[in-house]
Length: 93
Image 1 (cartoon, one colour):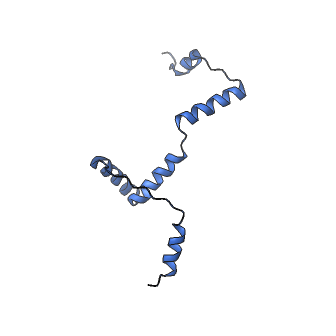
Image 2 (tube, rainbow, N blue to C red):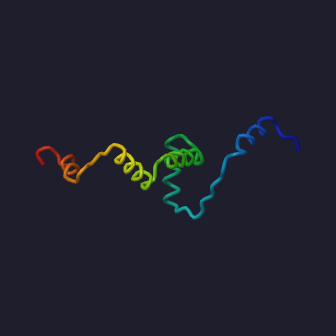
Image 3 (cartoon, one colour):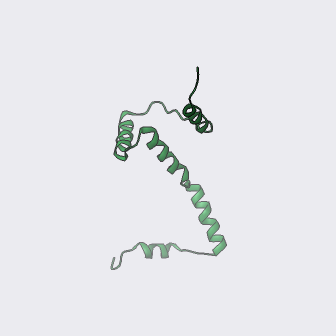
């Protein structure tokens, strides 16, 4: 069986790609994801890859806290609870 140049190129492009299989997806979750993909004009695979890429780019809460603590140590910044409350209180409130 002979493969075309396109097929070989496609196989090489996917050689380093990983695959994820998710089972037992609730119907309402599947339907929402399918709707989001359709609204974006994407296939389900394209939509989920975009969502996973965005998720991977986000810091976890523990990473965020670690970065904040390091920044505080370097800058010597001190923010009291009173100062935070002051910024949260609307003018005249």
